[in-house]
Amino acid sequence: MDLDVLNMFIIAGGTLAIPILAFVASFLLWPAALIKVYHWYWRRRLGMQVDYAEYQGYRFCFSHRGNPGARPSVLMLHGFSAHKDMWLGVVKFLPRNMHLVCVDMPGHEGTTRTGAEDYSIEGQVNRIHQFVRCTGLKKKPFHLIGTSMGGNVAGVYAARHPTDLCGVTLICPAGLQYPTESKFVQRLRELEKSQDSDGIPLIPSTPEEMEEMLRLCSFVRFKIPKQILQGLVDVRIPNNDFYRECFMELVGEKSRHSLHENMHLISTPLQVIWGKNDQVLDVSGASVLSEAVSGSQVHLLDNCGHSVVMERPRKSAQLILDFIIAQQNAGINSNKKRS
Image (cartoon, rainbow, N blue to C red; front, side, top):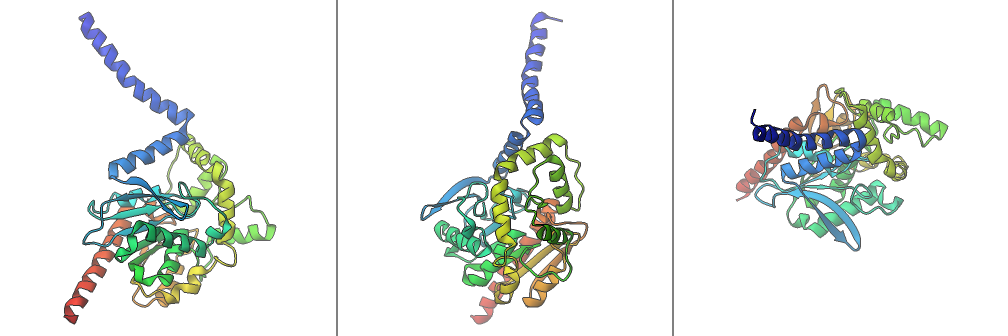
């Protein structure tokens, strides 16, 4: 073989080896950094831009895509100890021309961390209302989506600020009195009796606890390498004190049943999506909402747990889009009848 050709292959092989070795090193040595790069990559690929908004010195971090148009804007509220990027799987299956906004909830990720008064459900509703005002979302009725803790906030928001919204989607929301207690709620009762705040299943501090949390939240059993589990833990550990403070507010008397106490005030068209195999918040909560809010649309998903937006992103996106279009068409037909 010609020496120049041989050199070319060696250089090409070396060039390819560098990113491969970098990836392997990141996977083994810095899995937390790799997870952050993964989120950055998917935001970029899906066209989601990260931005900040301020309200009287309080900073909100959010990602967004598109501009307000014929369809209503969509605001998404994530669950406890998550962040705006948890919606990326759903965003992937929504139209590129829809105006989408995913915000970090109070104290989470890039949004200002203050104190307990902002972590209760009422406090979070107030902060999200401020976000809506300072970003101009309320110029036109928008569609609000929330999951778990975010579903509790979204439901109470709908009760408090109905004129801001054209529809609301609650995905396995917290804040109800569930006819059937879940495995997670039973565990919380045990912790309450023992006054053990370090054993909360949603606040893992080891790879083993992280794996257990994923089993609790998901019906689908993912085989996740230990390095990635360690990376997920490494990302969370610096925030665990905040998560405990926030969690204690959420299960306190003021917030524990916030949605249940306010659901009768929801007049906005309501969609409820729930995994039938939810071990965190029992699916029996769906019937509580459907009985309290007339005309609500309920979807129960087979072979799906609490992490609906991660387990069934395509189905979630389709249900949400169909609901938004149906409500929009109903509004158009209503206006035609009046004219």
